[in-house]
Length: 224
Image (cartoon, rainbow, N blue to C red; front, side):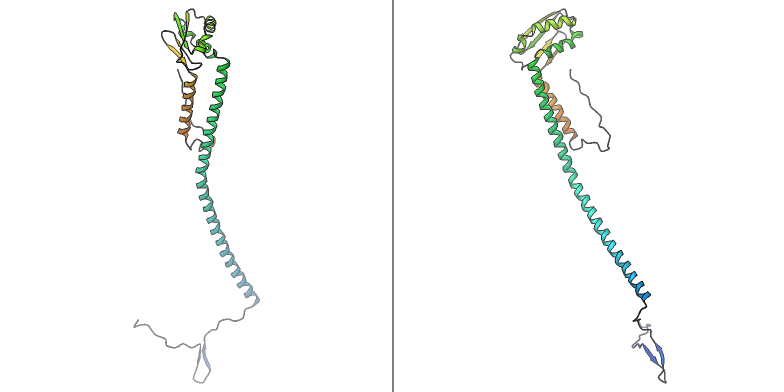
């Protein structure tokens, strides 16, 4: 600060010893030509447009952020709705299947036993006797059906039908010595229901493929 020259006074106009102007500082321009006015106007307009565009871009960025946030909140809800719809559709299909199966069993009660005997023809061909246990209502008219089916598949052994009140309606068991086969429509329906709900629970909210056209690997189950 000691080396700095201090200027106490400054004058825009300096006169010499005889009174003539020795120096005069340039004064701000107070008048402009039409060309200069237009140039200034264009410059101010350009600055205003740039400021307006910057404001619009900022509002667009804010709007896009709000849209992205709304989508992020909506997508999980959509996944929950889709999962609930999938569960309800599966339960409705299962209820329809049960109703159809029950009507079919009421209309053709001996059909499952006949189909089981036809499927087991190779396994029972050497068995000397086949014992069939069923609920009393089914067992009442089963002897003639089984003998007819055994003759059709070439089974030469004897067939004995037993009634068991502990069996549920339309349930039966085939015992051919070396093995057996059973059918219980209520238990089968329960297993199907459990498997269906287990699959839905495993899929959860991610059942839809992330890549269009992709498919999850199918799983196969078998019952004996």
